Structures are given as structure tokens and as C-alpha cells.
Image (cartoon, rainbow, N blue to C red):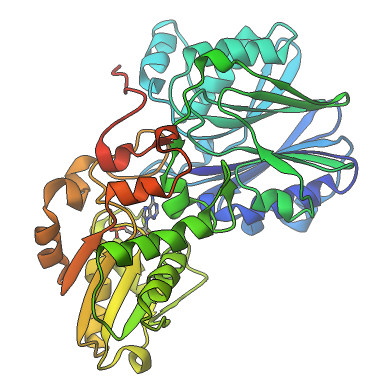
Length: 447
Ligand code: AMP
């Protein structure tokens, strides 16, 4: 998971880029980087950490040039190294290129092996480097042609922004898996993973960059290049469930409304008698509101979240993962004591969060704890950029719902059905739900 931002603006470029990048911090907290064009060169600041940890005031002084690029990165286990931090930079054929990428290539290993066999040495362990390598290799003065040619070789998910000293270019894979948006007003054009990065600049006009579309923003304005023949939309459904902010409007669907409605549907599907509906904050909150409103059971904040602990899902070992649930969420005894609780969360992956929370909610005096999950069981890993562990660690790939219920120690456990989940989309065929069904739209390629 990552977040990308590219900007073209007449004034305050650096500050705008900083604000926009900060607003998509939820897409990655391990590393942050920006590129600032001086008009003829690219200047880079990057490092391991949050946006406001990396960019001190002296790094944010405004420079000449109208273009900039930003990236926030969520690293997979063991890959949080400074050499992987984006945006990546490349110098080729008298030009400077920089790239920020969200997604995951399924043919990375195969492409990389081919290059290595031909003598190429890589500087990172990221598939983004391959995207940049292919674009620079095919570049003969026309960036659109170079990207289009590289897209022939790339398979998988890529929502990217490329920056050159005199332009930014956004492009999205032919399945449109990860989101990418284009926003503009008279002064500024911005390409970003989510609309919050656009709206924070007071820009109200924005649209999705389409699957397979390339958008160039330079001194001549905004130009769009499409290749409709190859498009087969398979937008990631997990963006609405978990990844995106609730205010994200992706492909015409608002994530908050999606989540709230998922809570309503889950109540219809799996009602339960209880005294309180409590969310696992923050991602479970809109769904818990939906479940509470539909059921008439009061909504209550039974867990208090430490806002300064980031998303804690990817920790190196199980002990640390369990500790991080405790550090992040604390049960409110005054709310929970003596009550029958419906605890609503967006997903169960390894089962760590729910097991730990149930123990502690009981300790706080709850009489019953019923778990309601507003997505189906995650039975398959994602190969397109959502960090899920391999199948052996996915609890639902190895245990039935009844067995999970027993293992996490709930009084009852229900997941939203896949049929109900797909009802939340405007066109079910346009979405990838492989993590729940194993129906992968793009097959993975071996080495
Ligand atoms: P687990 O404890 O492994 O069952 O993970 C489930 C919790 O992690 C839920 O509370 C989700 O909100 C959250 N979650 C689900 N998917 C992800 C992801 N890809 N990255 C980080 N957190 C996630």
C-alpha cells in the first residue's frame, strides 16, 4: 500500500505538496519522500518515517519550478529500508525522471530476472524501479509513447505519477486496480491517490483517472490519452472496506456510505440481541454506525484509540502484533461493564485484533461479545498491493467460521456475505474481490 501525489502549481508548490501528502498518510507510514522540480532539475528529500518527521522547514523552502511529486510508503515485512524509499529518480538520455507508484506488479520477478540475466544491477527491492527503468529505456522524446510501451510489459497494479522537470504524468493500469484522481482549478493541477489530497487544497473539481489512461500536465495544460481496447475494470474492493479514508469518492462510490451501508446489510443478514454496538476504531466506525442505526441498538465508543499509534497490522512477529493492539486500543470499563456488546470491525485477517480485543472487553466486564465483520472472510492473499500475509497465516483460509469463533473466543461471529458485499458496488463485474473469492483478475507469473 502506498499513496502518491503529483502537483503542478504557480505558487506555494512545496507547501501544497506537503499538505496533500500528509492527508494520505494513512496509505503508508513507513517512509515518505518528495521531489521538487527547479524547472531544469529534480531535487529530492526522502526518508524513513511520517511526512511531518521527514520534511523539516528547511527542506520545505519553496523552489523555482512548478512541478512536484510525493510518496508515502507502507513497507512489507522486512523491506523497510532507506534504499526502497520513493520517489525513485533516474537519469537517462539527457533527462531526469522521477516516479511514485502505488500497487504491485505480478510479473516483477520475471521481468527482473530477465534484466539481471542481461547484466542489470538494481538499486532497490521495489517493482517501482522496473516501471521507471522500462519507461526511461523506451523514452525517445515522447513520454506518453514511452509509458504506453512500458505498459505493454507491465502486468499487475500500478497507479503512478511520474515527474520530469517540466511536467507531471499520471497513469493507471488497464484494470484500474488502485485509485488515482485528477483535480484542478485555475492555479493548480494535482494527481493523487485519493480526493482528500485534492480537497485539502480547496479544489472541488476532480475525477478518477480511468483504467489505462495517461494524463500529462505541463505548460500546455492537461492532456488525456486513452487506450480503451485493453481496459477491463477490476477496482480493488478493499479500498472501500479498509484502505481508503472514509471521505474517499472512488469510481463514484463514497467509502463512508459504502461502510455504513455494509453495517446495515450485516444487521439484516446477522442480527443479534445486544445492549450496545461498538466499533473497532477507526476503520470499523462507519459500519458500526450503520449496524446501530439499522438495529436500533445504541452506538457506543467502547474502545478508546491512541491516535498517535499508526496502523499496527504489519509487525515483525506475533508478540509485537498482539502488543500493538493493546497499545492502540483500550476498553472503556464504564461503557462495557455488564453489557452485551456487538463489536463491529471491517475485516479479520490473522485474527489477532479480534482475539485480543474480546479478551480485554470481557475483562472490562462485558457479559457477551458478538463479532460482526463487514467483509467476507479473507481467504486469499492480495498480489496487487494490499499487504496481506500468505495463505498459511490467514485465519479464514485455514479455519471455518465456527472454528474462528471458538479460537477468538466470541459469543457469536458473522461475516458479511460476498453477495451482500457486491451489492454495495455500482457494477459488481468492475471490482476485484480476489481476497475473498480467489478469483484473481490477473494471474501471477512465476520467475
Ligand atoms: P488481524 O488482527 O490480522 O485479524 O487484522 C485485522 C485488523 O487489521 C482489522 O482491524 C483491520 O481494520 C486491519 N487491517 C485489515 N487489513 C489490513 C491491511 N492490509 N493493513 C493494515 N491493517 C489491516
